[in-house]
Length: 250
Ligand SMILES: NC(=O)c1ccc[n+]([C@@H]2O[C@H](COP(=O)([O-])OP(=O)(O)OC[C@H]3O[C@@H](n4cnc5c(N)ncnc54)[C@H](OP(=O)(O)O)[C@@H]3O)[C@@H](O)[C@H]2O)c1
Image (cartoon, rainbow, N blue to C red):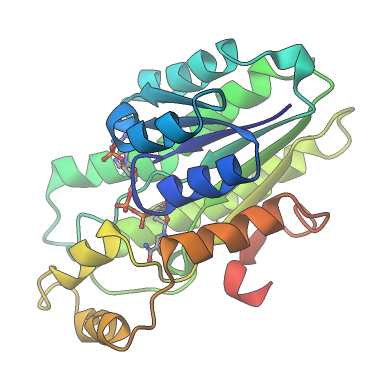
């Protein structure tokens, strides 16, 4: 069995990743606050291959706990590979420094950076003695390297996620069964996150017209197309050769 744990599975890119993985006959555990609801239709189509776990990843205990709960439901000795896709994320608060809603800032760092670090830690510790191939894919963003005014919280979290991926990948070097860890930029994908970007205040996010134009020009990837490309890369021999990749350059 090849098992995949996907966070942010209830909608958007995470849901499309689950659908692509299930279509390829892999076993999937989907995690989100509303995973059971968001995955209900896929669960009806793939009743033997999909589990949903409802968890709020802004809560560090739930972030690690959801991974342990997922692993407990898997037949670990029968798993040839176990892959964690840290996909859940929020672009909010779209606000410049000097205008931060403090609660939203803490929430964003918790979801975009702390949760993937704790989830990765949980996976690596719980699977350390298994022979299974282990992979971690962190869904990052071009915002990790491009400074967008108004997205300073998101940019900081994604830059942190990239560098966490580099450091954690370096920690695996020389281990007997090293996990492969990659951060990936998925391109601009037509999800609720893009709706939020187009709904933002241009005074806080001056590049809003550019994102309005990407939508009206049909330049966004569909979640299904982006997910297909990501899954093909994830299961290819190329996965792990580089630690930070942009799917548009693969
Ligand atoms: N869309 C783009 O153009 C784009 C570009 C670059 C990078 N990305 C990255 O791609 C990833 C997916 O984004 P998306 O566009 O698919 O976003 P989305 O449509 O807004 O979906 C976000 C997902 O994250 C989950 N989530 C949010 N807060 C959560 C929490 N507290 N606990 C658990 N789950 C939570 C949501 O589920 P619940 O609400 O059910 O919890 C949902 O499943 C993110 O990491 C994002 O930064 C997206």
